[in-house]
Amino acid sequence: MSQSGITDPAGEPAWREWYVEHLRIMCTVEGIDSAQRFLTQTPNWSPSLAMYTIRAPEVFIDPYYQKIRGMGPWSALIDKRYYKRNLFDSETDGIGVAAPHLRHAEVLLVTDQPSPALADSALSFMWLRAVGLDRTTPYRGICVASQLQAQGLSHRTDIAIYRPD
Image 1 (cartoon, helix red, strand yellow):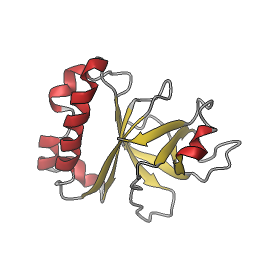
Image 2: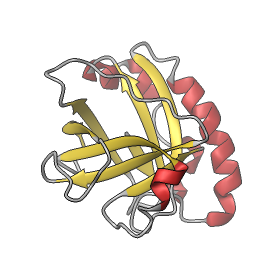
Image 3: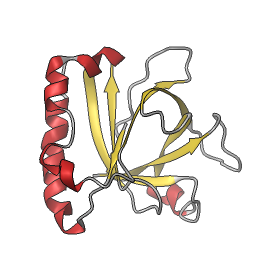
């Protein structure tokens, strides 16, 4: 997962347009099977989150990946508070799990926790363990939910509500 935000809100429309093409290009890397971008307005969370399915960590050393990765012309406008890259593995006994693909009627709930548990949640989170890159959280829980389910969580500061871009 790659998280980011830009320092100039006026650039958001152009950045969103650039990101669509960037994700398409990223999926041309051998070993990257999916890519989807999400946006949130949840305070203190990165405004943008891109979630990828990769087959193996070796993708990150591939010369083609190295050539196309990153924020390109947006690098100078990336807000360093929000820029994080984490490689996660699912907590399913080493069985690879593809990133869920959300429709526009769905949201991605995200929580970062010190262990794979979340108090007072009736939702079923899939727990991901940080295994590479920045490792800004030990565990990340993700849950696909309806927009209606997410409405009741808007007061929570430990759960971000991300919508497909």
